[in-house]
Length: 577
Image 1 (spheres, rainbow, N blue to C red):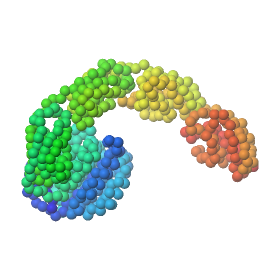
Image 2: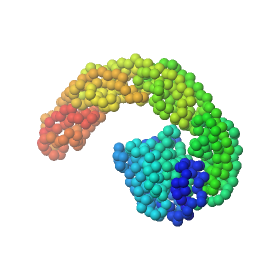
Image 3: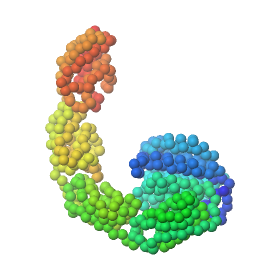
Image 4: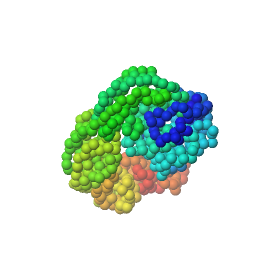
């Protein structure tokens, strides 16, 4: 049996999480639930948490959901961003809602390859359309690690679906979103369809969130229950506290901190069967009066215990230089609340929004020292201590001044030749020296070298096509060309000492000297073969002396001197008799 939350929620303002759970009872029961799991397979899902990709973590979490799925209810699968890059129409219903075939479902999820955009709003619309044709109650469980980037507003989509009177709920898990501002659209989507919103920052919380939402979609609510809480009456914002509890410890039980608007701002999951114990609970940024709650998602009422909690302002301090050269490393000392790894030190232009960053470091200890990369553009900046990615606790001004910069390379170089460039200026592995056409975009590169602290000399390889080029000194943070030097690439000079003809199948020797760039080679091919064709071949050698075996087939052949980028620098005709 399942609880039809949607009908009852139409009578009250839509809210998420604990507020929603307060209204789970006294609704009509339906025999079967139709659920579609909508998975984010956008390119950002290759990001890592604790050394594992989010794709892998999501696969494991879905496997756990399948293991505990109530097979009285139907489950389908939709994904987006898994087929094509840059395509907002890349949304696919992979499994129609129906009786669960766990093996097929698992294979399908494991085959998803994250690569594309994040059309989450359109995916929810399509899932709702699929479910609308059924007379059974319909639920979507959406897992997304990013904001909508295909032009729709998930909040409006939720309102639209609610206004259409569809018996439909969207539960949402925001997976590793980074800061609270990015949660707004996903949270609103859940609110406007009468669903729950959970934030998952790691593998364990994703599995718990999915498991709880599956329970809410397919299980009945039990009456009664009791719990207790033991926690301090006050604490500091954005820190963590230990909370003691007793309670039923059923699947889906958790402790939460809730703000004055009824939104859960942090939670810890109660282990199944662990009817008493202590849990570490992350507190949100923002001084004020909150509530700690023990929530049993499948109990009525779900809030089994509650205690007031007052949060006071946190204190932090940043110590560092007032002026640094562009692109240099900035040594900074920080003191402040650690939180759950979502509090960090960052550098931004003066006047930037709270969630912006040009480089950041997470605070893992109450006092730490960091090295931040100074911006590439001189100007006025700020060092900021940021709570939860969107609340600036303290800031310190930082002036970024022009650095001494010099490129010293040759004026001319032969095509395909290796040559030396000396640099004066900021050094970092994210910076590089490259050679490109003068009209190439700032992001263009050919041969390049990453810059190293303490190293001034770098090797590059000239392009194969003669012409005018330029050497570029590039910084990141943000990306910027800070110096240029013109350089002319001359036609490759290849000298041959080779026979005009050889006997088929016999060994012969010759000399070929030319560009010394990495990846260049010699090959022997039939005359007139297309560029890039090769048969027998050898890497170019320092002494230029080669020993070869002539082809077995008589005819017109040619030795080719091929540069590292595949272009033929010179050819020598060879008659095979």
